[in-house]
Length: 509
Image 1 (cartoon, rainbow, N blue to C red):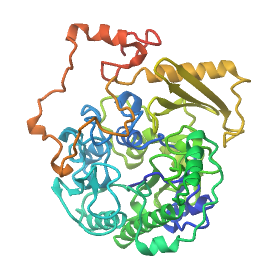
Image 2: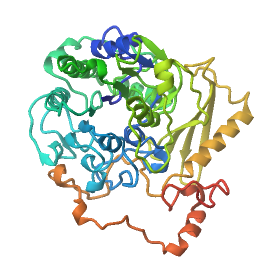
Image 3: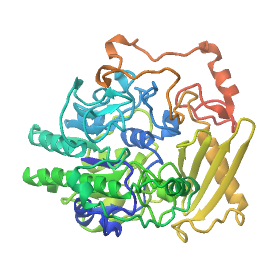
């Protein structure tokens, strides 16, 4: 079972020291399981979900710089193998209860075409916490392709459905359940009793030490707007209660001992003005590649196999979840394309250190188009870059940190280590050249005149109405490799292609 929080702050759980926001259920998982102390997601939503489901790098998938917006036609290529497909092939019953956010334009991108037997929830993000559960005005709440109008608080509805599904399961077969909450993502809201509970909560958060986040808080105060912190706290409390309901169901069904429960956040907390989260002492927040944007709350519980109260220090990423859970459960992964992630099961179960052999990379173009937040994590060293692109210019700012000595990124060593900066910058550059030219970019608004459907449930084009093979695009087949080479660092025309002959172009592996 996987619980995925949405924008949960590093400092906003009890076992990380939070004393005002109540998170007894999350704290219980940490107490009864193993904290994955150096778990990394991507800085934003859709890329983490793509990495989680495929075990592959979102940069090669074309879902890295921005999330999949309602007006986009992007999704993850159907040739990519999703984790529930492997578990279903091994006899598991599979379900997703919550937010998808990995494609909606055609049925090939949607949950029940990617290995899930059961889907209750939303194709999009930001559907609100109370009815009518809509995105851009179009209704977005379904159960297995049928529009539903369930009443209540969204977070609690997900807990109720997850519990119902567990109780109604086929008891002769194992199950794979994925519960991606919308909470505590904006637009923030909570039941009245929880809003009242945190109404007097102050906002004493320390600065995030990052330009985008701290600047947004400054403008909030300048405009005399209320702090989002109290409402955010109410939303976190509600999510924790929902998690508790599902954990209670596992207890009641006698499943807790033999069920793996993984919880983590899809990115660092939204610490900007309207988000309300807190990542301190980590630097920065959602959308950024400082630790506060990518290092997240993460715990795994499996009483039958894991010693309670443990902590794993090896670096783990969202790409590692699929191979890790497959090894832990004894499920043979069905992927034909190679994982970019690796199994951390020996490190989690036996405490064996598992250093990474290759750097981890992170990217985001959110929230400002043309402003890229980038990072490379290589052992103890980490390079953070901000690239601001103008129409005829590009400004690059670099920070180099040694995380074993400076985990909170206070001392910039870039001036003292220019060769290391250059090597990691070149590695980031090479990594970025994999990106498909039609991959996601950050867009706050739709194309002029675009309209949302009245009901998103029936928006995806059915598989039966699609051609049998992916569209080839405009270039003639005999010219595609030449054109891909000419595109250089601008991106790839050939799917899943890594230029290896030269930095800006070349043949594909």
